[in-house]
Image (cartoon, rainbow over all chains, first blue to last red):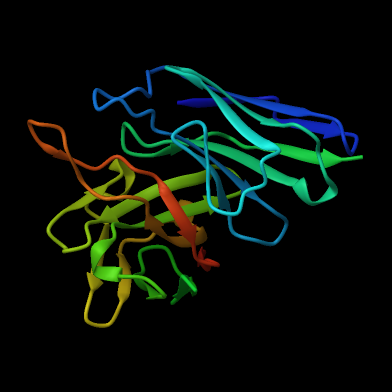
Amino acid sequence: LLTQVPLSLSVTPGQPASISCQTNQSLLHSDGRTYLYWYVQKTGQSPQLLLYEASNRFSGVPDRFSGSGSGTDFTLKISRVESEDVGIYYCMQSIHLYTFGQGTKLEVK
Amino acid sequence: EVQLVESGGASVQPGGSLRLSCAASGFMFNRKWMHWVRQTPGEGLVWIARIKGDESETTYADAAKGRFTISRDNAKNMLYLEMKSLRVEDTGMYYCLRGLGDDRWTGKAWIYNDGMDVWGQGTVVTVSS
């Protein structure tokens, strides 16, 4: 089970945003990797990968996106929100097959 | 350019069957795990199944076991999802996804736990009487 908080947030352009993702089982594998991913789904599009293994930006993802956390608590941060960041953000774990969080809707004021 | 293009979505009656297809291009298809994920307004994103690049291994979500079958044709760069005994709750957008990374040797066993990096545009399945 992955729990995202908040389920929605409204942010002024240029301001930071933060989304939490909590699990009830550790996502740290014995191989040393943490199997937590972040995706964003923009309106009318398929989800796209932002971060892998909790904190690694995927190819082409702006450096205003960062991920942190370990074990069961993780955070996605956007340092300075831009209008193009509007969408629904999902966390996903892949250590126990695959489950997604409920999604957090980001609105830009 | 890496591309995944799903097709085969349709409107079917409860109890019916359907086969979804996903055409892959732009990467070494036979080297990658592939997945199917469903999205619905009520459940959100739900993982359905995965298949290893060489077709030697498949894994299913509990809800998919016995009714859904994932398969692939590496010669054609195609991924499939056969669905039978369809239920109203199977309604949704079905995405084909490429798996990240490769199997890893832990010293005791090969494991694969990576997530997914590329999603198709999806195909819609509607199960309704």
